[in-house]
Image 1: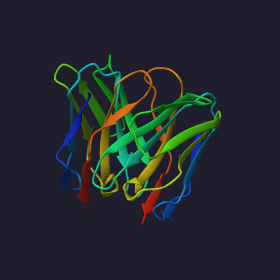
Image 2 (image 1 turned 30 degrees about the vertical axis):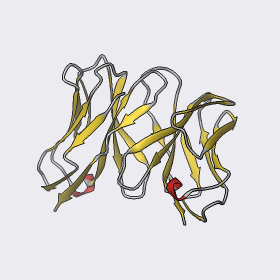
Image 3 (image 1 turned 180 degrees about the vertical axis):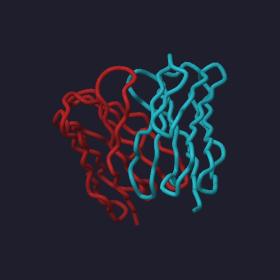
Image 4 (image 1 turned 135 degrees about the vertical axis):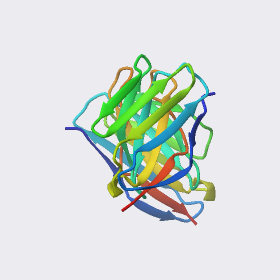
Length: 112
Length: 113
């Protein structure tokens, strides 16, 4: 069974610093990996999706990498802002049906 | 553009009462639909998914059931709620085909007392 782990569980950085969020998964046979953002009491917002054949995806200040052989994905957020404060979740699709196995998330606080 | 609606936003129910949460998607057809639950201090867990009308797959044994009476409508139900059913319930959809993003609704916070 696929297991997804996110470390650290919480992270606090001053505004302007780059954020590095880690995600690891146990089964390298994933279909894709998706990064989400969740604000308190809200639903999830999709940030980036990396297909199994891709190494990375970029959107604005966000960049996500995927290394299937080592079972890792990393989300980079450049020049962090207080508005980036949220919980970030990674999720691995275990099959083509779109079923996702989620990590527990990393709670990020960006201080002004 | 596609939108997903989920209601109610919050719900407080006594133990043993029934439950019905509804989710509808607009702007797309034949979506895959999903129900996830986020329990306090735990990650999201897939409860049910559906690839078409009347087609429901359950991922975990539990006190809940799901139905899809129309193409863009997904309902989560229970006949008798348990305390352990408390949590944040999220509906999600995606288009058919491999490798598509999931889009989530705003969620329902359910408290069973």
